[in-house]
Image 1 (cartoon, rainbow, N blue to C red):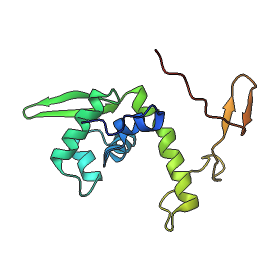
Image 2: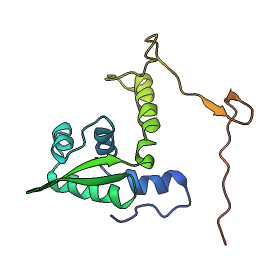
Image 3: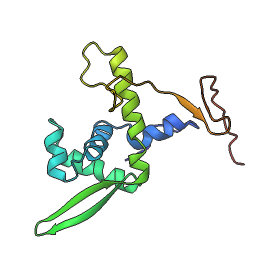
Image 4: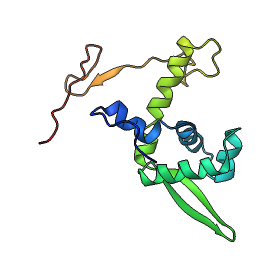
Length: 144
């Protein structure tokens, strides 16, 4: 797939990998345990086989997914998230929390299992050993 954004921005460059239609939903299907082509397709009503195949190849090329042949006749693959792909779980959780607060109809909520109460996102500074809210985005200089 062709990069859509040629900007020196983490968000833009991330969207070049995960920003195409269906891509995040495919990653989410694998994250929740739907690891075969048919399981992923079944979980995403309206997604064509050709597009699913294309997106899985793209995710594999970008190191978010690995495939493993589990049947040779016909060839069938199982898909697994790499460490990089699994790290997107925080993005999904953030979207669930955003949806709780901003969608007209909410489908999911994120809770703390032991007590059942809803959770919030917080940022932690390992140097100070505390949660912080005074964040700043630092622009890194481009290499010359």
